[in-house]
Amino acid sequence: ELDPNHHCAAVRAYFQDVADLKPDTMEIHLVKEGLPGYFWIFPVNTSECNVGFGMLSKHVAERKIALRPALTEIISKTPALAKRFASAKMEGKVLGFGLPLGSRWMTNSGDGFLLCGDAASLIDPATGEGIGNAMWSAQMAAKHAIKAFQSQNFSAAALSEYSKELHSKLAKELRQKYWAQKLIADRPWLLNWLIGRAGKNGIIAWLIKKVF
Image (cartoon, rainbow, N blue to C red):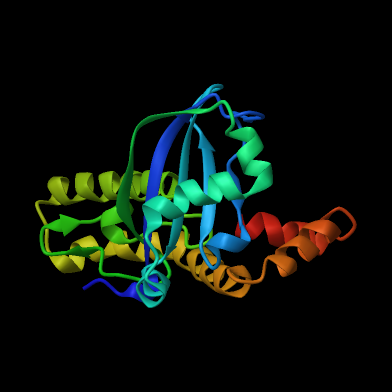
């Protein structure tokens, strides 16, 4: 069952020729018009990027926010973004989708099945990024699937070893990122303060790296 406290509603579109795009840098922007959600720019290559806006489903429902127009409004009304998108061209349409966040641990194995990636609710609660955890979980699932075929044992008890390994690898980090996201979601001043001191304080720099 979808829990709006642990599910993100989001929209995204692909753009060409966004200015100052760094191919090796994933950007997260907290802008006043979009809080407590976040705006992202994920480079695909040197000229194309995935641009989107997401917010907890709970907040979307409470505030009756229309995400598709919100995406274009954030781009046009945020001076730094408007400048970068002045010559950019959108490819296709703005599409909506749901992000099952890893902020609560879900059942990911049972009699005859293993779940990985989005199906196992493993999306990073702080950034909305899911590819990394999807690849980790897929690698683990493949290993345990091979064991199951070798032993011809597809029971929930046998496949629970996958869940234990996955929990050991990801659960703590996902929980930490969930609480970090809740802390800074509508407090951009706090994130700015932390970033401003990261260069002078090793502990703060380490903390930011752990979250993002």
